[in-house]
Image (cartoon, rainbow, N blue to C red; front, side, top):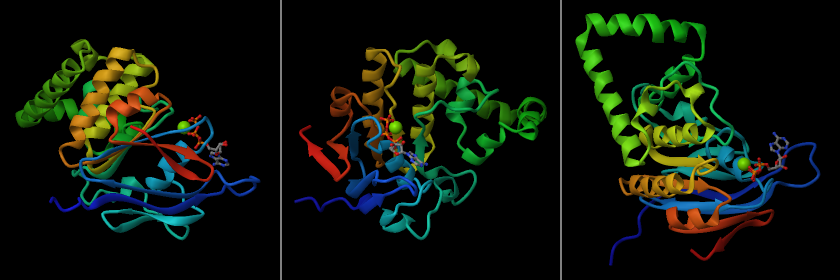
Length: 263
Ligand SMILES: Nc1ncnc2c1ncn2[C@@H]1O[C@H](COP(=O)(O)OP(=O)(O)OP(=O)(O)O)[C@@H](O)[C@H]1O
Ligand SMILES: [Mg+2]
């Protein structure tokens, strides 16, 4: 018999109560996700799905309980380690990657640059004036004088084209600026990026919203395939049909904790 896989993510008796609000968002949430496994969570609007993602990623501290990645504490009432800071080396992928329900505010990048860029801090800096100088003046000069950089960019661009074709999307998207693309396509790009930049756990908050049914289906296959490379995945959505396609286990978030649904 195979030994049970060690959990990547452990959520232990986590409760969340915002100060000044009469009731807790949720209480006693317990969850474990192993390598290669995708878990889906659904729930009513306002049930706390996004807040749970924030706790798991260390963006919000829980009122009680603890979140661990590979056995190390990420988030508890007394401390939290933001997932951006979990990158050991700036050129290495993060332990946890995350997509946000609200659309990305990063401007001035082509789709392929966004998908293939693997440094979150550097990417965030592109939103600043000095980041834009770097992207539009320093980087092109570097590629003229250092041809290897250009070859690398070309490789990354081609890799993005393959991704888009794999999702049955128009490859011309790769060259378009993020801000000219539809919300749904931007969501797909965020997911592709999150799947690429992660080492242990990806957390996707409503990845299928604003997508055509066919694109959503192909994307769900892509997500499940990526987990097979040894990642753990958490996918939040309202669409239970799609969640059942992508997830090995499915839960509903209620004020009293997670309730397992039949997959
Ligand atoms: N910083 C905050 N302070 C106080 N209350 C908050 C805060 N953030 C979220 N909430 C509240 O917590 C509850 C859960 O919100 P959350 O966004 O996590 O729900 P959700 O399940 O993701 O909803 P949706 O399905 O609409 O995305 C809501 O009542 C929300 O108003
Ligand atoms: Mg939400």
